[in-house]
Length: 253
Image: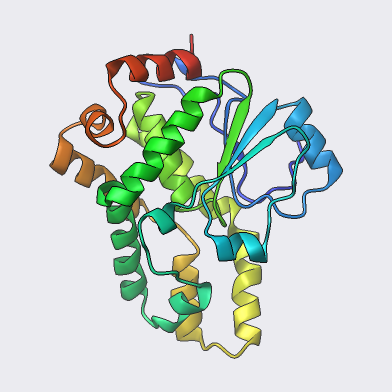
């Protein structure tokens, strides 16, 4: 199945703690949906029954690389970083950090904000409502690379669908394989612009995900709320009834 989208995958088929599977062709994650050819659009409609796109990007990211409009598919922009009042960081900003440790520290801060920042909690509350509202077709959610905002959104969904953390890490880390070609191209572009090897190493770190980033997110949930269910109830307006509805909608025997 040739989908012309970087870092695209269907969460369907992942098995949870009780042996139930995430339903196929319902929850899709990816990088941005830019310059999609007609064959890819047709595949998303005909094979995946795509009915809703959730774009986590900021306005400037969308202006630079807008999603390809797909006929009869609802498009929603949910700017998570904007809701968090986060400083806009370009790829060049990461290169200028000149230290892998500095990039790691920045990324740990991002994941901390994705859990604890009130704006992020508001954003993920909206995200979960959109997921619960889509009763008929598939939802694809994405940011630029499908890496951090999308990676955490995917982890959140799988956590609430009672998937083992080991399986959540597997999905999270697939990004590093799926993004390699695109990342190599980006690094080469910055090399040609005159960035030195130290800066390129920092940039390369920012373009991939690390297990420790998700560790940090899960540890924060456990430390501050005890369980994912309590976090969802306190911060995302997901009570037991909504949680049961989510699992009934997206899990199958």
